[in-house]
Each structure stands twice: as C-alpha cells, then as structure tokens.
Length: 463
Image (tube, rainbow, N blue to C red):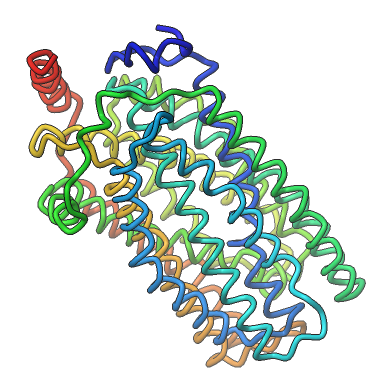
C-alpha cells in the first residue's frame, strides 16, 4: 500500500515498509544524533575546561535534570498516546520539538561572555534541562511511530536498524565538529566559543529540515487513535506489571550506566590518560564507523538466530571490549582504536535489536489491555536510560573532585586511576550484570506470532 493513501485506508499490520518510508524515518535521527553527540560527549568538557565550571557543580546540574525527567518523560509519553489530530498522534510532537531543540542546543553551545559564575551555572542548567526535554519531545514520539508502522517481527528490525544508522551518521558528523572544537581549545577560549556558537545554528537548521521531511512523508495508523490509555498512572502500572517490560527497564538502566561512563569520559581519557587529546574524535570515530557499517547485518542475522541471542552476545562483547581498556597507557592509541571498533560492532547490534524487542513487548501489552501506549513504554525506557546517564554524571563529577582533578594540567596517579576505573570498570560490570539478567528474557518470535494472531482476530471483529 502506498504512502499517499495510508491516511484514509489504514496500514496493514504486517505490511512491508518501503525504502522511502525507511529513509524518511531514519532522517531525523541524523540531526538529533549530531546534537546529542555534542551535548553528551563535549558539553561536560566544554563546561569544565572552557567555561571553568566545577565538575561537581556540573554533575549536580545533570542530576537535577534527571528529577525533571521523572515528570517530563512519562508526561510526554502519556500525552503523545492521547493526542488526536488529523496528522495523528506522533507527528504533531515531532513538529513541536523543532524550535525547543534548536533554542536549547544553541544555549548550551553559546553562553554569553562576561556572565558571573552563578549566572553561567544557571544558564547551563536551564539549557541542559531544556535540551533533554526537547529530546524527549522528539525521541519518544519518534520511537513510538517506528513501533506502529508495522507489527511484523522482522520488518521492525529493519526500521530500527535504519534509525540506528541515522543516529550514528549524526554522531559521525558531530565528531568532525568536535575535532575542530578540541583544536580550538589550544588557541583560545574565544575561538572555542565562536566555533561552538556557529555550529549550533547550522545544526539546528539541518535538524529542523530532517524532521519536516519525516512528518511530510510518513503516515500513522488510524486504528490506534482510540486505543490510548485513560490515566497516566494506570499506564505506568501496566508497564510495571508486564514482566518483560519490567525486566528491560532494569537491564537498560544497568546497561546504560556502562554506556554513560564511556560517553562522559572518552574526551577526558584521551587527554589525561592517553596524553593524546587530539585523538579523541578518532577513538569515537572508530566506534561509530563499525557501528554504522555493520548495521545492515542485524536484520538477516536476527531472522536466523533470533533477537535475544544477538543482543545478549552484543552485551558480552561490549563488556569485554571496554573492560580491556583498564590496560590503557600513553602510546597505546592503536589498542584503544581496536577495542573501540569491537565495541562499536557490538553496539550496532544492541542499538538495532533493542527497540525492535521493545516494540514486540508493546504488542503484548495491547493483547492484555486493549490499549496502544507506545509513548508510555518508550518514555519509561528512555527515562531509565537518561537516569543512568544522570547518575554517572553525578558520580563522575564528585569522583573527579574528590580525586583532586584540576583541568588542563598533568594529573596525579589517583586521578588517572579514577578515570580508568570509571571508564573501564563500570562498563565491564554493568554489561556483564545486564547480560546475566537479560538471559532470563523469554518472549521470542513464536510467542509474538501468537499475540499478533489474536490481535488480528480482535481487530477483524471490531471492523
């Protein structure tokens, strides 16, 4: 069925997704991934090393933002499920995220010069909370839209593989900007500020264009419009009662503790452990290139081996790759590049299979409750991933302060081993524990087929 008549006729649940739809769905994550990369990888270092904000204070700001997420994430998920417009439930939210994302990304990148320390901290605090709120307005409805496009077990993997590829493409683009920002740090504070401010304007415009294309091309399934949950707390209760969703909430939180440690500390590790700050973008690029390049493999491999074994293998491989980084010393750039490539290959699998499995669990919820609440589910999963990031930022900020970290000087052995312990030890433990827990997951393709058959029978009776 073509895109043009999907609004009026509706979408068959097991339909194949056209490549135009796949491309359009994957386009917004390019812009969003670019901004998210710079915010998560560079903003902490920009704040401590350029703006000279204390690490503990930045950690506190990020920690406070997680308290706001506890309100904003489920609220956006619930309201996204309840939205009723001629455009559907999800696309109005994608449009609504455009201006806030542009504004708050610019605020993070271009704080005014001459601000007092207190005013600067307040500015960055508002910008961080605002940016992650805008990201929620985009990510939760966008993920929900991907889950709704089809009920087919493997077509979903193709959809989310494309989304992952788009996200990584945005990251790779951001690495070029980050490389020049790091070079600018050796020139002057003014050079960094000027470059950071300029790139934020161009990035915001590009992200807006990507979102507009997605909204223009894609259509939503009208049969889901009247299946929203009645009350937000009831939706939260249903998520927690769903044993598969509950397990993923725990696994994702633990797994993201490890991922957050890597995200936060890569630039610091390159500069203060490896003594090669200019190599940081190349370390990340090694991860991203392999993550991007291997994405097409996971859909056919999932058909052959199943989604669970692939994701489980990716967790164990990630644990091994990052755990080996405890051995890093100056001059070991090739070792870090190789380990980053191995971790990127594993991360590509997890980034593709993870949301596909989540979408299958949402079908099970519809079978039990008669409701379609993708927004509530993806909001819950997104909240725990951001919570893990906030926890690690807070822990990192205080750990570095207690260890005696002072920016832009040679660090003591205590600080160096603090970096190593957080950068290698935390991911190793987190991914091992996550893998052990996920090994108990038991909602496979056969179980999903039974659920879909029942749902199709119910939908046929309702027509």
